[in-house]
Length: 311
Image (cartoon, rainbow, N blue to C red; front, side, top):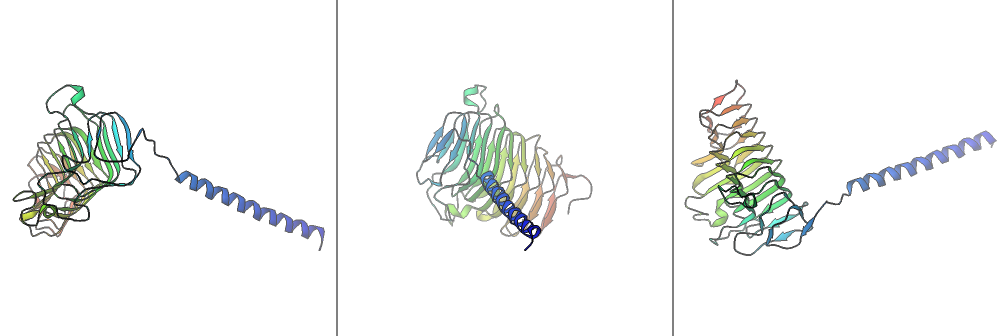
């Protein structure tokens, strides 16, 4: 074999070895890039817990709460990020179990004192993200914080809820986005009467609040006892927007089965309402556009359409 041929073979072998090494480095680098350590100030290893210091509080494992009282996590501080870090907070109704205990449990509660300007009793910048809350009467509640603001709930899954998955009361500048709510079922409180008689279920609700944005969420499997269920419900909540959400009920035959019910004139844009008796029920000042209903009995009640792009 000639020297030129040997040189060519050697070069080809070296090129292949170089390519293998470079590919290995790229794969290794990619794998390392996927491994990120969550920036946590505090780790939550057991519940119940009351959070009284600002910072990032994160789960490092799934946690189960089987106690009584208000629930597993109570936040009483500003500038708190609760990161479930892809873990689950389980309550007694997890998996669809029926619980007849009269004590209402909340997965995560932020409860300020209404109507005071004392900053120590009004909480700002609460963020709840990246995990699953399952098996409570209320998934997340933020209330009594009219002088606080900047609350965000994102990238959550809330399931097996017997009353309300996410509830705001007397808050301002709050956002719920990219969150999935499933199995919203009042019968988990008892097949006969549920959590009340009649028992209502709400996916996301806001009352007496200002500047609430509900964006790109999915709410499925609504089932209120005696037919009362609402995917998104606003009352006395101003300067707000409901956009890009999907709401689906178990069936459209229930008495008060509503995809979105609002007053105080929010903007309702680009939502999808599936198998609910009433798609969107609105006050006269609510503008709505680019919404689509399917399987509904009454697509729209009230409101003022902006153009002809509602179906």
